[in-house]
Length: 449
Image (tube, rainbow, N blue to C red; front, side, top):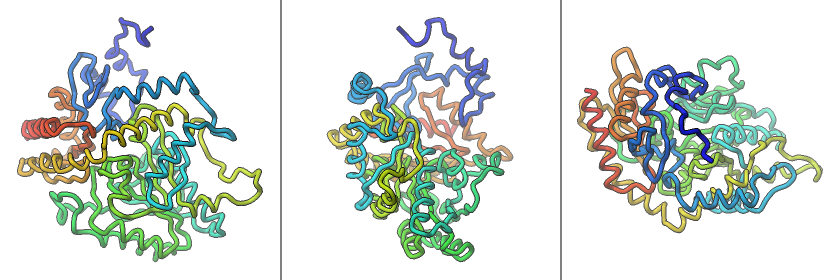
């Protein structure tokens, strides 16, 4: 039995407005929904309800790097649903989830050996912030309550993640509900010194010293944690300068501040390593993950924490709940089974090696856009890149939205944030598909000129 009747008119239902789309221009979509309705997907392609093929230029939303409909993942989901479809994580557990925690910890930097599961990046960020507060309280430093985020940072849409995030439109409507004691580092994107960088920019490591300014302002004894994305994704693939993350680590260590890496985008292969922490040679105290761990098939997220943090919680009466936090679906067995299949495929198909081989392909391809009249900057690292286009006078974001919509007409499902086109093609992409993707974007930019 199909889920939808044959006579269901999806475009009409979208226009009717019962479904309120997240992070979308709903009124604009309702005016012309036909090309935006995805009916199915396979490999690196989506197929619209009208049967048009769209190359998935951002792996869903950074979360389907192994492509859509992978047979091993589908089989794992089916088998687990028939075996154990749900198991509460409160006071009981199950083998598939327990084993997954160990496999994730094995891939994390040395010393990060414990995993707390959530269901999304947003939940995972808020979990990490809670862990930071609890850790300091347990150590007798409950006065450490401040959280330091970064301008242009994105850490989900929970109230904690929104507060430490630094993307203004995500914050302004909810300003009255921000958590107290949050401050922000300066962002690292300076086109004057970094424009058209390939990989990490050589300029800007001293931007990390902005943390010393905040320490002087607030006093280190009040700061619990610093949270940053190693590569800022939602604000347009902002790559850290050489030495920047190392300096942040040094400053945090010197002042007893926890360092949290939000690797919701960079975790599990996007930079050709299990985590950006490995790629950049910097070990944080916690790593937040989500998205690619299940290839987007079932929601899952989590926090990987150090032995020091975990052991600090394992104190007090043995019958006590050490951390009063968690979710109904934490460590869901369906998500865990899918994650096992993802890790199996990544190992057996040498996916990390494939990403490293495709990195120079994407780099060379995307930098061929330099010189187009509307292109103001290009950035790349791993299997991700971004192209900034010149905004329309008085209408920031309009050109990016227009390029997105024209992309649907030319076989590309693009991700445009404002006037930045972000790329994160699936790991299974071929060099030919990557070059074709960039050539398609070239034509769109030239047409927008």
